[in-house]
Image 1: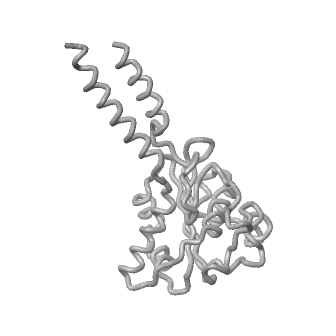
Image 2: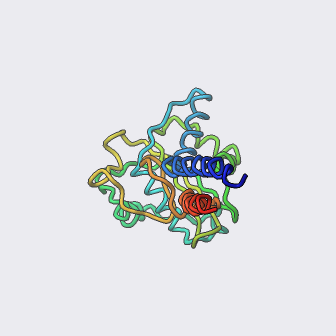
Length: 219
């Protein structure tokens, strides 16, 4: 009876393995999800769709890092000085300084536990002023970023808007932004790294499944 059950057990474990591999190959970038929510809300309100600019997204991540994990500073008068964009943020991302464009809006939110994109959107658009920023006709581009702090909370979300010209503003040297982990940003089709903790990773599941699969054949 146990011998007859082996093929069924092995098949089930193999199916789990394939599902885990598929999950590992699927892009998982919550910053891109947030940009999608932003554009959906704008178009529903008759505002234009914004271009997701990876250079601006990377700068949004640098903007977060300037707060050094101080969640209590968000919403106050403290914010990075404008000179940081050309002196620090752009070089850290590999964005050409000459391609920087005007920042036409900023949204920032922070909380101790990780909020998924839909919840983060609600946090960012918390009042009439932030709603006006979201729907402004001055924007042409957007960049979003998310990251935790020291492998955990607090978690920051940032959205930067610009009136730059698509394909010519926030241009990244070599076409690929510099590595800016932990965290992730929109526009570069990359998976999030170290920004969030969502439990067991896909590859951990793969390893466990392989071990169990080997055990099934030795029963």
